[in-house]
Structure formats: structure tokens, C-alpha cells
Image 1 (cartoon, one colour):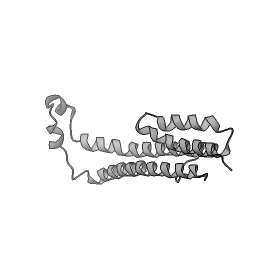
Image 2 (tube, one colour):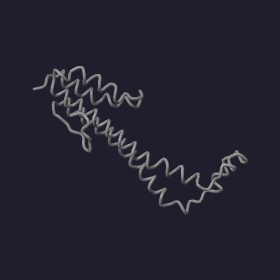
Image 3 (tube, one colour):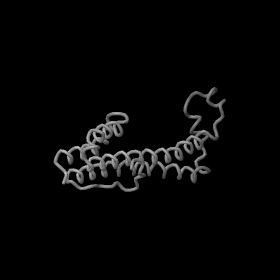
Image 4 (tube, one colour):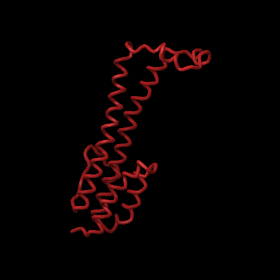
Length: 153
């Protein structure tokens, strides 16, 4: 049976991942702090800390892969018909839109838009899953995030 202190620390471990919206890398720093403070003394805190960190690392990997797909596609599509001389001779931004051929790029742009949409869905799902996991932890239940790569075992 978990004590209320263990449940609170486990819930804070999950909730501390939301600091990413205020502090860069807060979604890694604060869970590590909470997790390492009690991981040796409580199996419940150890499990929840590993879950929170594994989930954050998984989200990072998924987002990086999707960004590696989307960003080059957008850059290639926008810049493929523009020469370097166009930038030197015409500083205004009209040159980009005058030479942009949308009809020949619709297929590849769709892939990039879908990748960006998936990133947005992942971030929304992350927010709600973190809240749900912290509620489960505060109730004394162990929660396993879906689609998590087990980096820490």
C-alpha cells in the first residue's frame, strides 16, 4: 500500500512534465528530480517516474521523426523554383509567391501537412494523458502510457 506522500510525489512527477510550456527541458528536469528523490525508497514512485520519463522521451522521438519529414518537404517545395539570384536582385517577398507552383507540389505538401497535424495531435494527447496519469497516481494506481518506448526499465 502506497502512502499519501508516495502518491503525491508520483502525481507530481507526472504533472511536472507540463513545465515544458514554461521552462525549456522542464519536462525532463523536474520529473528526474522528483523520481530520483524517492526511487530507491518506493517502487510506486520508481514505476511512475520511469513511465513519465519514458513517455517524454518517446514523444520527443516521435516529434523529431515527424519534423524531419515535414520541414525539408516545406523548404524544398517553397524554394525549388527560386534561384539564388532572385533573392539578391529582388529583396521583397513577392518573388517567392510569384514563382510558387502549388499544383505540382500538392502530393508532397500533403505528406508534410499530415506530419504536422500528427505532431499537433500528439501534443494534445500528451497533455491529457499526463493529467490522466497524475490522477491515476494520486489514486494509488500504476499507469502505463500508450505507445511508450521503454528506455528506462
